[in-house]
Length: 340
Image (cartoon, rainbow, N blue to C red; front, top):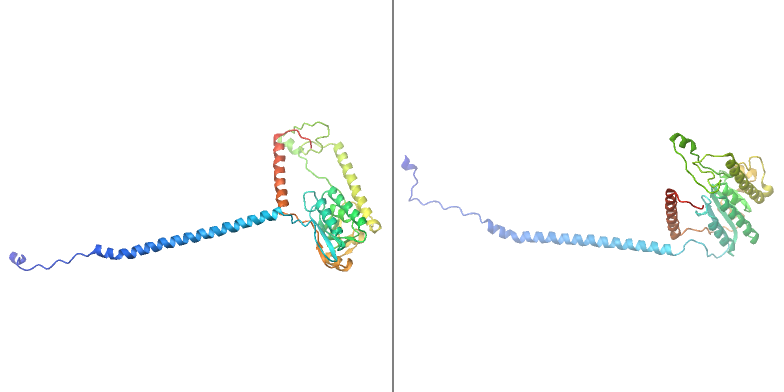
């Protein structure tokens, strides 16, 4: 049995299977692998070039935009002088608070009015007002300039057209016009003066805070919100308010004349709708700018003379305001003596 299990040494052995030629096949695949790698590298390079090109285009457009803004800011597009031809109605808009640092300042409004009246093609002027009021000084300057221009150009009427509101300082300005046109729902009036503020002395006492204010001049700390009020201060402040109020009343009476139906409430600071203001003689009739230009002045073509704030002026104003606020804050913190 053992002999039968022993393989016959004379029997030829079966040939061994040849080993797989892995190295040869790898060599056959090498050209394809290199080609794929080169394609990936080339594609990555193309994508990188495209991205670089996009960024280059972006920066070029950004530079161009900045350059245009700089050029726009360097040139004055404020509209201080409007070149016109032909017969037209001049328009000047007074919007917002009347103040020396807004577009409704006496400087800007008077410049626009001067240009409007000075144009030979101007038949009449519309001053469109939408304002809650503001500085009595600025309003008074505009009021006097309107009366001066009306006297200088007697053939060119000036009409005020009221938008949503013509109150307080806004009406101070409007009173100088030849006529005042309103909408029935406009707010008109508020002929009065106010001075407001806060007092913190009671709160300071509760918190145990003591105000240390040193002045040269017994009234230099007048109406300091952290110091107690006195009857003398109240009397002095009220006298100032009454005097400015009387100036306002005189301007309204001078401008409106016999058209004004005076009642105890007229100069009390109350305000009325446009419809009621016509009844009281605070306004003359109803109408908007198009109506006045077309049917009253008889010159339907409207040319806007309103001074537009240029980009450079706007940036300078905001920068100046920021610097001023920072300087004021620094002075308050430092506690230095000041003349103000």
